Image (spheres, one colour):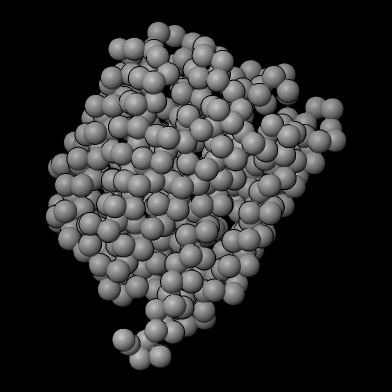
Length: 403
């Protein structure tokens, strides 16, 4: 048995991990739980499939724009000082979108404004989690395991989101918007009370000019593999959210699966993604060579899965393919997180991980509208695009990630 001080420190770290894991969980719920109810929103708002996809896309596009600023501010002033107002803004965005859907005759524009506010909030919350893990855990093995938990929390949000979204929309179609302030408040309280002052990094006093030089030096030294990791992260999110949008539409439009049943069906392959992230984070430890090959293998698995989409159009087959795709993406993500978080100096960690998060949001933003457009044509166009992207990501992992 350890000393009381050691036990207290371990308990404090566990609670800190729980509070950190709540952020990606809640941010994912706030976005992904809308995907299974997009067909219903399309009918309620009397808008096109492409317009419906913008409800997901606008959130991500705004986050992409603001994430680099949030990364710099977190490096400059401290992680919590950025995360707390960001979570508050996320909640306000949910209230604006929900109130518009409830009270306005033509709420679509105001729903988008609410989603913009959510996106700004997300830019200052979710991406800051990765550098904060790097700040808190000096031991690489412990940090890798924690990053696995963070990715697992992210994917658990994806597992719960179709079920929760369907349950809430089953009561009133716009209720998912109003759930966002509640979730954000929970995460806000956890961050305020469970992340101690001595666990977050001290703010630094370097000037903006010095900071730009530091960032430039990081890219000079690590350009080849950093760019590869950024692009791979974007591609994996593009494939995941594109496939999720396609599957949600097909299950409802062609097979009449709606509500909680559809949510449960979508949750099965997403659960595979969640378990794969957790196991991968535990196994990679601090071995950079293992991280490279786990990333490559995960991409190959996801690429094979999307290439198999057109062979059959039965729900069980498509869900099985998505299951395999989820496993591939799930095992790759913690390695990408760890490669960035544990390879960079603390002074620039927030900004670089924020750029990585922004690239992932580009994938989230691009997936649904791209698939919505391609679904109007032969399925081979959609499959070809996803397969080519997966092939490109695999080549980047193989050639450019060099431990």
